Image 1 (cartoon, rainbow, N blue to C red):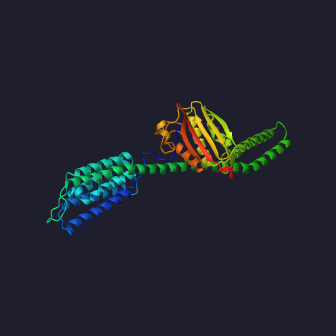
Image 2 (spheres, rainbow, N blue to C red):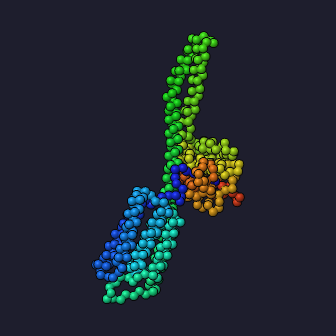
Length: 439
């Protein structure tokens, strides 16, 4: 078993999470803070420093900000590469400013972590780690090459080499922690948010289909009465015309086409009576048969077994989430089965269990513990966005099925039925003895 594609969601790695306005605003904040600090140290405290070189670096940052805002605007979203390049510039500009004002001796050296933090929380791993490596290189260079720290000329200030090494180590540790831990947490949060959005898209699609079936049934009901009137009038006309006349042939054609329309309307009524009604109730065995029916024509045998059964089959609300979740798992089983998919159902007074297994190669052992996480798939990605039944996809199918079934109160576990494979999904609902229907 694996996952299916979900349209409407960008694949990981092509997100554009950072707005241009965000980076422009942060850079203006940095420009203002740097200018105030330099002017205060030079004019307010009277400490000597290379004022014009510092102001030139600050002016360069301001000029870059203006140029980017005019050329790209401030409302667009940046690609990961473009955002990384801008953060790299900010890091180098700050490094140059620190090199002119004491290097790691300068207490503002801690600001080297700011671009690393922004990249770790907003960019993919590759770009985030590139910024982290650049920050480590800048910190290492500042520990060796820098001008003296601006200080009172009448006093002598000396920093012990071990103290400087300690500052360097602390900055490197901060870079590593933010790049590794913070990026991982932010990456997981983005995945969950995007996968939940895909779940809502899938659920919305199913609900739209349900509404369409309901409209079809309503239209069939409304059209039934005038069509019956037409058929009745045509039969009365047939009794009044002579056999073999052109009028008789036309009347027979009207009666024939009216019968055909009635057959079409009957099929439309059945659409509304099928699983489309999200408020209908049905036994578990019927629901399993319904969600399996679309996949029976794919060359795989789907076998149903009922094990331990305490009383009649439990009743489920035929909700969109339940139908989509069960149907998705059975579809995945038919995708990877060699020839047979088995669906076992059992129920007692305390629990209801459905086990879906196939005779395919099974789940990859290294993935079993993580099944149900978003963007986890063993299928090669199809960049062309092929059909869901073809190899490829974002790795959201099992996540969506698990999320939707858990909303009905189910608990899912994944394993292989044997050492040679045979993927197996176990779905368990706790059963309330006072409430027979599962919602």
